[in-house]
Length: 182
Image 1 (tube, helix red, strand yellow):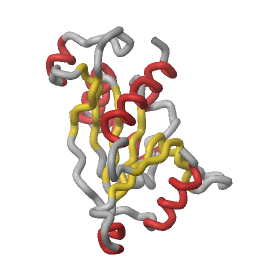
Image 2 (cartoon, helix red, strand yellow):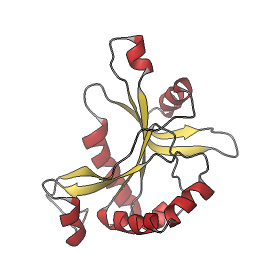
Image 3 (cartoon, helix red, strand yellow):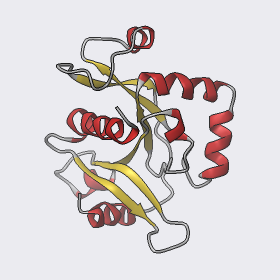
């Protein structure tokens, strides 16, 4: 399976397991600062209101950004690690996660993020696709091909994300989500 097919598969798993359902709002390919020389695109952005019954419940909502990365080359390709939400996640395979983790531990990933994406938040985590019923550890030892027929997948948290501050306004981010049309 090539990179684009793996990316699509990971995006489909993300949509099915995290982004759809009652009270969930998301957009894909969300452009931030388009038509400028520093435009950015976020693979998926989700808005999670505290509740939908009051103005304050909506205003207390948070944004979660998801960047889908099929392999370590994709992580370092320059095609976006745009983290603008209170929470932000890389969505990837177990093989890519193991490589990111190695780079994270020796500070290579953190240096790359700060140098290439200085506006991105330090508040991020990693979600890994695993077959339903398997742990990340089991999958790390004996990986299942992402294109294996008959396998149902889910996303598990490999690296937890703490909630952090957001630098852009709710109005701006909601408008960007709306403008993406997806």
